[in-house]
Image (cartoon, rainbow, N blue to C red; front, side):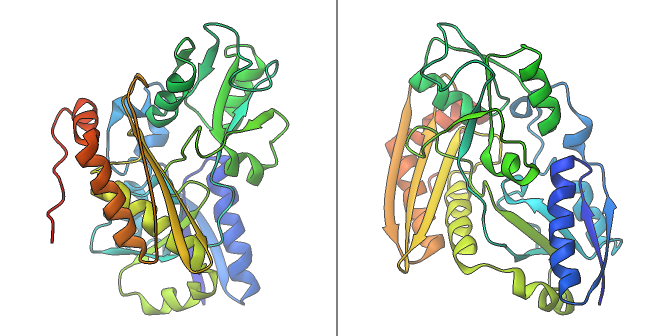
Length: 310
């Protein structure tokens, strides 16, 4: 089968697209990659949380899918909005890389090792809020750009440390500045972090069948749970919400965090269950009832509605 993959043009996005292309070619398919520039790639001088555009890394790729210019899109799953248009579906979630965040520094070995008022780079409200909860003295500076750009800014001394997803660094083989992998209880990752989502047109049975071998049951269960939590909280990819589900022995254990942007209020919840969507919705509802709605109201400027009880 001839397949065309739509991908962003960053080094990491192209690694991901080429990785999937190689696996598909191994199954006998002819594959080519089309680079598509997205809104998120074009706006590089503003913190993501301030842009606020839903689907800023996916909209133009979905347009190419809808127009049948490409047959599938390879995304970092954390970039995909929790509610997909009815036109599209996630046809496969391949085996997941480490979902945790990495502390990268030239001089310092850990978050705790940073000097008073140390400069740390991140444009993620989720990371910023959790960092401030453990080190309220640090100074957080915005950090945008691809992995290479961010590491170059670190090397140039613009920051004492930066926080990046461990998965991207491992995939690109750029782990030399990783000094600490942050545990889930210190830095709860973004929903879907470390996972890829392969998006197709809904109902495109031929493409879905071609991708079926890539779908990993535990990765899909974990990420479906995390995305259900995010959906319950009304959150996009740039809000101070962390979610990490782990599949083990037929059960999912979900850890979740909602934090105020300044880190002064950090709500945590966890639960275990077997139904991924139900577990995510239950933990999300618990966080909303315990004050998560008020925190998110500060971020969105509106109230996050409590889900209807059955």
